[in-house]
Length: 536
Image (cartoon, rainbow, N blue to C red; front, side):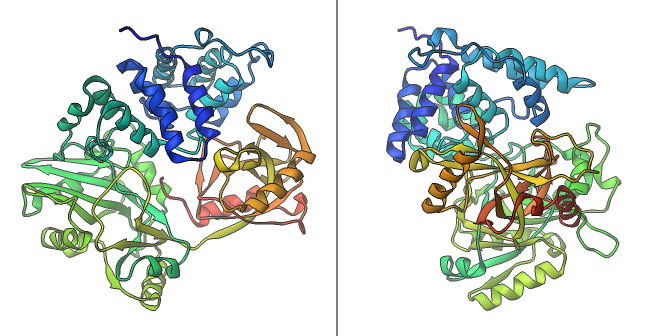
């Protein structure tokens, strides 16, 4: 039986239904109901978009290009009693074609040309569709469920086991490739995805620990390692062939010939290692992350380790010879690593069983110039796909006082209250930066850290300050100050400040401060220089 071509309207309707639902099973049912009626090509795109991912990867659309596209005239207002017909919405393949064009647009004037391309799509959309595409291109799609729940719904729709789908995504290193195989072949298509050297896999990620006390409560006995401010890499060897992959699974082998040479020297012909590349100053202390990252952002193939002294430090091994190790406990994998990799290239590690011993290791890591520590369960297998509690990272938190510029309506349990805050720093008169809100530069958004009582109080307050709104966002007079805790400052093209706060969360409201006392953009920049950020 032929199936109608899927349109963006279908995804937005499903996304809105998921946003309005708090129960996990009901959310999954909404996704699965859509997936079951889609043809394979549309299923691939729908699953990717609803998971907040674009199959093309980086399409180079930042805040500037999006803002320019959004200033184009919106579509005609639709009556509240009229629902936009699905046929009026662009087909998913048309959206995919736009993303392809955006990815190919490079060179001088590319920001303006990308904005024009995106505007041609946006002006065809209603308010809900525009908000969906905006969230998708900025990586800020909020609907209470993303990749993990989409994978569960895909498994349900395609008759597969969720653990098999998750494992296939890990081994393939690509959500999109696995979804395409599921769409074509169902559960049988997953058998093709096995751990093989020279095929990059999705890395295991860490959750965030609020304190050493929390980590000690979660783990009776655990490993603690310095958290290096470096570039995450996988190193694969199969005989004489060696490839080095970045965190984004990009082949960076030509940039680091020293790392490839080290891999060839190891006493094993097949191996997959997980580690970090760091750059050191003359005193052996780590250089700022973004100085290191600039070496890997180059488009030529000049070796990065010819321009700066680089070291590679490994902390995990996933394959050794013919032995697949991902299901083994971390303590066993570490023992294999110690047999394979010389001590200077192994991550230092302490085994601790108390807050006092963990604190000593934490203090030592900070004194050595590292940004914090990693805490790892000794029993944990190597799993990828989402941040979990088997690996935790802990860094000293910074706090600033920022102004609320806008807030987005919540979903699920937070439906009916304003939740996701747009945060801004104060811009001084001599700071030459163009901002959307006069006097304030945006640094990002957060919905974390607020209790239900805080949300209700905030909603009433912000509605009284509203200046205008769209389907999802209430824009307010920049008068309310909140204290924000965060980990690091990173460069960002999404926001008019050129910066963003990483892992921002609300600590408390500051009714004792007015906007004129908020942290300045100059002060945020100073934090960025003093403490550069890491890559997500």
